Image (spheres, rainbow, N blue to C red):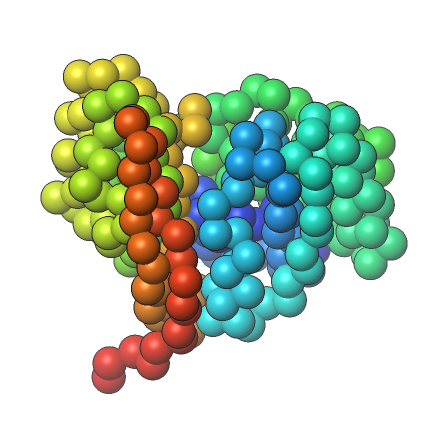
Length: 227
């Protein structure tokens, strides 16, 4: 079965890729939506244009799709993407959805119109266990945006390892936000993963206002692994 991958470059869609490959699926192409609005209902906004480097590191084809960020437009653009996936001979759609019923419902309803099967391997997984699993299994990522009371904003722009994961989990228990960020509490950008042939080095700048911080990526390089 060949899958069309909804890919933001964050930890969840990158994990979904990992899952699909090790389950024997073929990946047709990655689709990255680039919303004009930072409050998109469906798609990640921060730094998504840099998914090109992740795709290059994995040797996978990538298509960018511009979208306004408005509800109706996003759904129309998603429908066009799924139609093109069918035209290109793909059988299913892969997502990194965790808990968002709005996101999952819309993807599933549109996919059904085109007889595409939907695979969301992270759906309803234990959020804390999943977050702990990522650094242990070779996934490296940075926090590119945080927007929640009590989130450890000093971690924005930094690579997240096991110690940082525990800080996030403790803060989530105290302040009540989702530790895996499904509610928009934070966004991520993966810099290394088991499927990457090269690591990704990022440079940028951080800015904060109130309970919101953003790390704007300015420069990206693919780096050879140490032997």
